[in-house]
Image 1 (cartoon, rainbow, N blue to C red):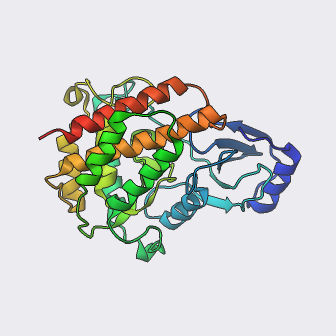
Image 2: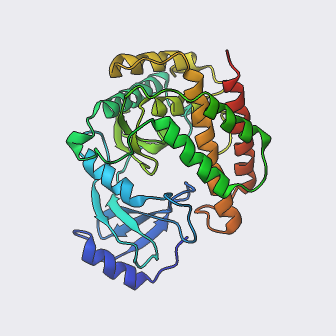
Length: 337
């Protein structure tokens, strides 16, 4: 939670956000562990402020300026909120932030969508599939994003980045994580030249839907970059393989077809048909990599929590357990024939 002076923040927002008047209310969203996010109310207007967390941060993490840039570029291409203002580093909150228009709609925190009908589930997952394929078909250069990611093998540079981040936030030795890092390094996929705008955290609870099961806004672009489109697809599939319990809910053990939910195979096939991309034979590398990247992210959250800087400090024991679970899952995936 940031410390701030209400009057100072109100004056800043009134001066920099079009149409912003008095700061009637500011409320921190309870979910999320990375970038603290606040609901702002000003008269009849409703806004969202997303900021870097306070305290010492890992290099290249919490890049709210990148989130602002990519969502601004994607306006009219895929559903995103309206971007209104990006601050500098010196602000009334003490960290950089951006402000966007609040989007009112439905968020499904549980991918099993227990309160929905089979028809609603099928419609939501189909819309999610179509939006991902549409995103990956966009030309970054046409949107002014040709320099949004580094050239070369996406997975090679991403593995190097997340190994570095993991080591910087490591709190205890984990033999399974070391094994996974070694396996990914030894089984690195070749660069096939495919480049797309990659969201980086593409899952159902990062999407706001309307009552007709159509997406209104894709949120949380902190991990976005230019990269391989199958990274987003693999991340979705990997999340579904987690247990349907705890903060990071998956679909493991759920009878999907009876509930109107797609199987991994049918979802992948539909995406491939829409995007014109085929899943390679070494698909287990993609899944194992996304497990490792996710555990590295959670390890960073755990480290910030232990240091007293987490956006939501509750559940550090859960974070520690998730790192272990994901390491075991990545190792099991890697060993599949």
